[in-house]
Image 1 (cartoon, one colour):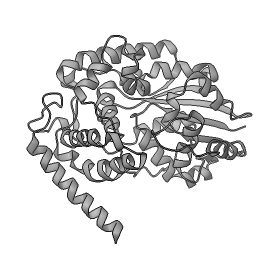
Image 2 (cartoon, helix red, strand yellow):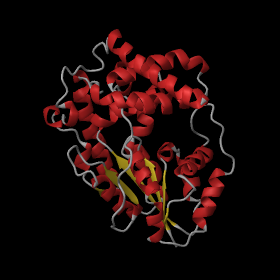
Image 3 (cartoon, one colour):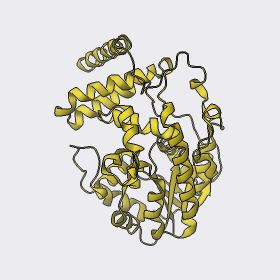
Image 4 (cartoon, one colour):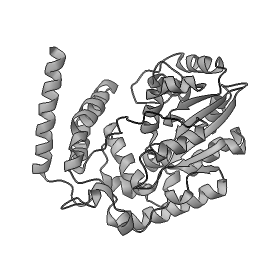
Length: 353
C-alpha cells in the first residue's frame, strides 16, 4: 500500500517552489520509490480542474485527465505518491471526498502549506491581477477585512484560497488524524532550503541532495501591478483564456516581473496592519483548535510588530510609498509601459521569424 500525499495548498504559500522542485527531481524521487505522476506537472493541473469542474474562465476541461492520473497512481506499488495542486484547497466537502475515494487501497495524507497574512495579502492580490482581475489593492483590502468577510461572496477571491481553517476542516474527516498535516512557511530570514525540508518531512520523502535551484514565483512591483490592472480593465470584455494567458505568462511573468527589484514593493498599508495582525492571531488559534500535525511552528503564521517584520528589500527601499496611497504617477507607469511595449514587440517579431 502506497501513501498518496495530496499537497492541496494553500495558494501563495510556496506551492510553485515545491512543485518546481518536485518536477526537477522527478527521477531522484523515482529512485527512492516515490512517484510524482504525470508526464509533466501540468497533467496534475488538468486532472484537478476536471474533477472539480474548475479553472480559468473559458478554458475547456481535458476529458479523462483525472482518470488518467488516478490510473497511474493506483497502478503504482512504491512507497509513496505526491500530487501537488493548490486548486484542491477550494474543493467543497463532496468533491474532497470524491478525490480521496479515487485512491482505494492507498493511504491518503493531506498536506496544507500556510504563510503569514502580511505576506499572503499582497501576494494573493497581485496573483489575482495576473489572472485578469481589475480591483485595486485598497478596495481588495477593504472587502477582505469587512466584518464577516470569510463568509461573504464578495471576499471569496481572497478568503476562498486563504481560509486555512476552513480547508483543514473540509479534509479532516477524510483522513486519519496523523495524516492531516500543516506545514508553515518559515519566517523571513530562514535558510533557503527550510521550506523544502519541512515539506519533504510532511510528504515522507527521504533526506538527500535534492536540486533546489528552481526559478521562483515572479512577484510584481507597485508600478507593474497597476499597469497590469489597468490593462485588464481594457481587456475585460474580450478577455478570452488565450488573451489572459498571454497577459499572465508573456507580459506579467516575462516582461514586468524583472522590474520588481527597481520598483516599490507591494505591502500592507498602515491602516490595515492591526487587522492583519489580529486576523493572523485568530487564524492561528483556530488552527490550534483543529489540531493538525504541524511541521514548523504555528507562530510562523502570526505577524510580529511591523517594525520587526519589515525586512529584505523593503528595508532598503528608498522613497517607499504604499500602494494604497494614490499609487504610481503617470510618468512611472509610462516608463514601465514603454519597456513592456518594447518587449512585446520583440516577442511578436520572434514569433514571426
